[in-house]
Length: 333
Image: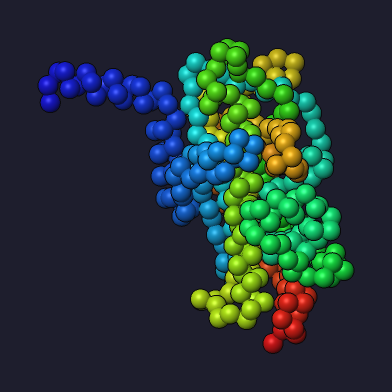
């Protein structure tokens, strides 16, 4: 390789290192080594702009057993990280924080989740309670039919109410610095659109909601197969899905209370004023690159504890499942 080619390669590497692509590859490799299923550059439909957009990574961890190896059958626990990887040596991200009581977090956010109970209840009540959303659902998925009679649907208890899909069960949602205000330094007017905190966070929220909708579409197929008594391909699994939007930022992160202090972890509350994306919206986790290893380790440990909660609530889950199946097909065998 001659000197000219060496200079060209050095130039290309230098330019790429300014972007988030090497970071994206590093993060995806790290997660795959820890047995996450990682999809690079998945797209989602933005219902505000009516365009397809890309997200950097979607990583999924699935558990079929709890921390002691006990099977969760017939339930399956999934945690999906919807991720953006950003790098900046020029722009610092600054978050204006204020003290908040940790026990108030459930009133400020909802952890993104869907499960077979919540799906059956919402699907059954949608035409009665949210007619505008029902119309949108029909445009996306076709004619909307209630799975359960409304009185039965109203009596169901989902995994949030059981304390399984609850924000307090993920340590990252309780321990981080929470913020509703933020800016980039230098000022964000001079910053590229794809690096602005608001654009990154709202894009993540939309992609996270898109992932939740996809999981609901899969549950539509599950319930249709049950109602038609179609044979299952393999063992039937009843899903419990958790969703967490996450930014990995390779750059300087600051929190401001009375003065600027360096940090490596912030939980950001973003207002998404759109009829296409009704609240509640989950908090967006923003984590410094150097914090990612410990952050993911904590998430994995917490997910095992959530699996323990699934196991300890098997009787209640089975009761809800029996109510749903009996309403669809008659008494469970």
